Image (cartoon, rainbow, N blue to C red; front, side):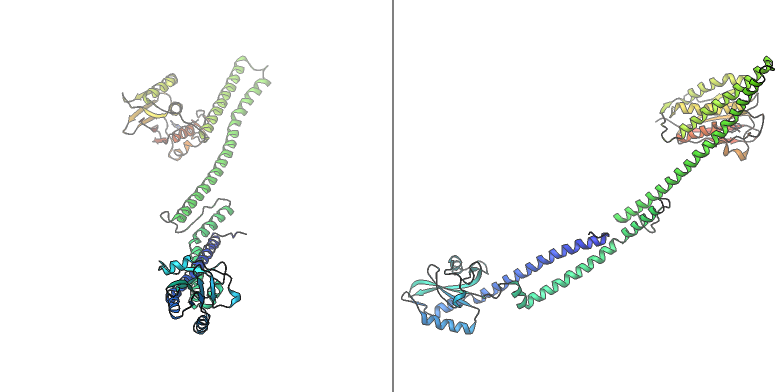
Length: 490
Ligand code: ADP
């Protein structure tokens, strides 16, 4: 089973790496120790074969000199029993040897290494066939054996015997090897301990981060994570932490926003039903009265009730349209159609529409615009709606005989539009609230002009979508002035 923490996994990987490295190191140590020993052995004993060949006439008159051989073998037995001496003929066949007879497995020795040895080897150790083992090779020393002046064979001396044949033998016999293995093992353990410690240390921030993320999840993604002291300028883990922290903040904010939007939507539905109910009830009331009193009403009275009902119908229709408009503007998918256009031309067009209405109420509509204003960049349909709302309000709330002034002022980065009137103005206390949905200053006044309180909410939303805002100035009794600014087309 895989461990569940990162530092445990890293430790496991480290153990595997150390095991492989350790094994390779042991193999290398043993092999190089053996090579070194063989090299030393061979170079120290190099002249041995020649001494013997010089000291003993081993072949005489084509015959092996048995007494001389026996004398030699006896002496060697005493001096260095590990040295094995073989007498070869000119072809490499073994004529005699010093080892016990049953242990020799070959009857001839390859002469190529012997000749290389006699020619002076480039590098030690040089190995030749080991007669005691049909497969193995061993370091040796050799010398030609002369019968008078004729080359009669070779003296072949195998060094070291069977001493270094097995690894176990080497380990048990060599203090150096044992020491090296012990030190190496200790070193690996120390490396493992250091590795485990540093992994635990390096991954501690990841552990903290994981705990923080877990906590964030357990809290339903609502309370953002707090990682004290993490900096963006740090390493990858620091950056990861800071980014995750920001993400958690974002997620929590958005959940909160969704919740608020949901609450707002519920409020709005409640508001809408409430607001639709009033004109609907009046409409129903007028129509029912008409139905009941159809016979007793005079034509004039009937006409009056029909008029009243029609007005409520109108009001209802407008309300529904405005609510729909506002909902559309609020939905996140709203796409604005930005284009460059001439604001003075638009103002001209819109004022035209209200000319008649203003005249009917005995009001003057005054325009003050620069002759060659640069184009602005905006959604022309929505800006038209803004102007309509502001002018309509100005006409609606200003008493007969008043004056409405529209002005445009071009600046370096935009054009400011302003709609001012000479009406009653807006009390200080209401000034911030008139842009809220359904908010009306004169809600309690019976003779107040009709309206649902949605026009300015729509206006504010449209300008918000243009990254702009609607401002209002008013000195009560001296009229109100609404203004906003649009950016120039580049
Ligand atoms: P309404 O449909 O009632 O006109 P609006 O959102 O357009 O809704 O306006 C909100 C309120 O702001 C109005 O009810 C009115 O009290 C006040 N208001 C708006 N424009 C003016 C103005 N030009 N002069 C005085 N009061 C205004």
